[in-house]
Length: 367
Ligand SMILES: *[C@@H]1O[C@H](CO)[C@@H](O)[C@H](O)[C@H]1NC(C)=O
Ligand SMILES: *[C@@H]1O[C@H](CO)[C@@H](O)[C@H](O)[C@H]1NC(C)=O
Ligand SMILES: *[C@@H]1O[C@H](CO)[C@@H](O)[C@H](O)[C@H]1NC(C)=O
Ligand SMILES: *[C@@H]1O[C@H](CO)[C@@H](O)[C@H](O)[C@H]1NC(C)=O
Ligand SMILES: *[C@@H]1O[C@H](CO)[C@@H](O)[C@H](O)[C@H]1NC(C)=O
Ligand SMILES: CC(=O)N[C@H]1CO[C@H](CO)[C@@H](O)[C@@H]1O
Image 1 (tube, rainbow, N blue to C red):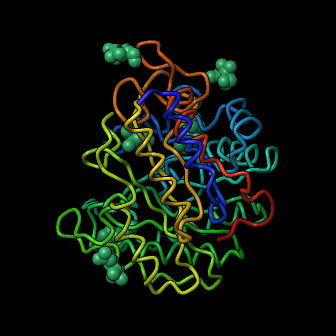
Image 2 (image 1 turned 90 degrees about the horizontal axis):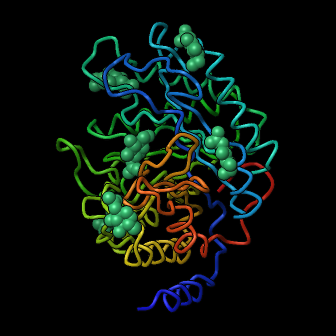
């Protein structure tokens, strides 16, 4: 199919009802960079060199020209609450200050929503006897939420992609975070992840080392304010990793089990989800997979938002996802061989046509 025809059909398909999508935007990744999986390595890191949160000009482009209304801003818990004093200890005010500056620019200056994302995968659970406990995690969230109680444009993401731990423990940690956040008086939207990297396709399946399906536990989350949604991720390549430029895993059929969970779960008024990570390679086949995925979200009332992976100030020419020749979503960036980056390819052709005109613009973050 010729590209212009393809693009035309994309636009035609994308003009359906957007009524349920309140939030659409992009991940701002960079605050978690510069650590390599060995405890303590890369810490604390140098701001602007090893890690950085946003480029304000890029935020301007996304808000003023693309009209998106949400950014997921990644950071590392061990930079926020240094290992020396532990997860329940005092914050590094320098790091917090840089982070707050990014969040305030997005929310107070630009009027968009900021999804707070501790990008830590496992919520500190290891065989290390000095590792943080659920109680420490609760204190961390109390400390963090109390900083943002009065910023209605903030959304609290409990953690990025837990995996390879008992699903019951993820439920405990999610619930501890929700209780902590609410104990501060914060009323904003919360996003709670499941197991298996919070993958939508595996929501009803055993993941990791025989860890129970997320669907068996995540329905027991309780938020007294009924303002919590499930945080789900979905990539479209063979192993759902976002590491390949060939799309072969259809979003709609792979999300069907998760959608049925949302329809039937016990969350009562909270049976909603935000797709906070997805991505696809720079090719027409992938553009079509993205179109199908976003159409599916628009067609199912349970989904209230989406964020593509990823923009950010220090990706350079690196592929944020989806294999070679894709690059990343930072406006103006190129791929490693000098061709147009994903902002000018994947975003422009496959994602931009789905940005609703009716996104939430004002008021406290909510379902
Ligand atoms: C920030 O983004 C703007 C707009 O894309 C770009 O011109 C500028 O070089 C970026 N600054 C840095 C430090 O990357
Ligand atoms: C706090 O963060 C800043 C900025 O990353 C860093 O320079 C400083 O060394 C950190 N302090 C501690 C105690 O980790
Ligand atoms: C880590 O796992 C241990 C043992 O399963 C548990 O006691 C502890 O609360 C967990 N910590 C976190 C932060 O989940
Ligand atoms: C997924 O799990 C939920 C909760 O157990 C259940 O209601 C739903 O029917 C399941 N869906 C599929 C497709 O197995
Ligand atoms: C460079 O980009 C071109 C055009 O997208 C592509 O055909 C080629 O495979 C790329 N080469 C490398 C080494 O990535
Ligand atoms: C699928 C994907 O893009 N994963 C990336 C998530 O972000 C980390 C850094 O924060 C990258 O290392 C991964 O490749």
